[in-house]
Length: 249
Image 1 (tube, rainbow, N blue to C red):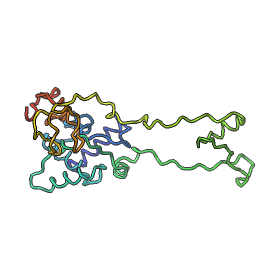
Image 2: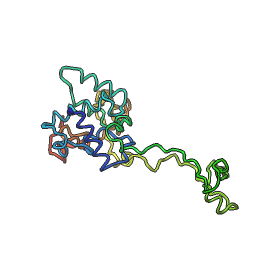
Image 3: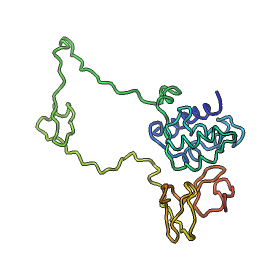
Image 4: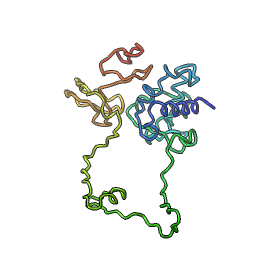
């Protein structure tokens, strides 16, 4: 078992025990290396001696090359290209901090068959004792005007009771990712002409306050510590988690 496989298997165990909803839901790349599996907390379980070993294993995991994760096409292309070079650059991971990845179901079942629930199967009606199976028929039920089907048990108990109304969808999901509820960002002011986005190098509009890049949509109000990956405010000069100086400060 090499470093990448060991990292993936430990990732599955960690998610299963701490955030089981992420077994089937996507999560941000920044959350992976800063919150779910930070090097400073998992170095012993990962069996990695240095932060460089950790970053190289994370680089290959996020490239999607082994099919452990479902990743975006551009991230697969960029990280895959640097892996093929003579000097791979793990810092490219930071460019995809806000991208979303998820555990590939096939690889997850192979690593832990109990991690995903078994698919639901239709259950045939059971005949009471002494009654031939051919004579057993499903209990009929009415379909409400809204398209919702009341349960057969409720219909049998109260056949004259009108079906409960079903509220219209508001367009929001109760299981929306936690990332959607992150703290409000403070806009940054672009003071000079020619200032560019650190993610796509597109020119930013001078003299305006902005939160996101108009070219690639990346959040410009935050940055990540190059050492531990913690999320930092745009104008901070040092990491509040490990004390590392932020590049360019």
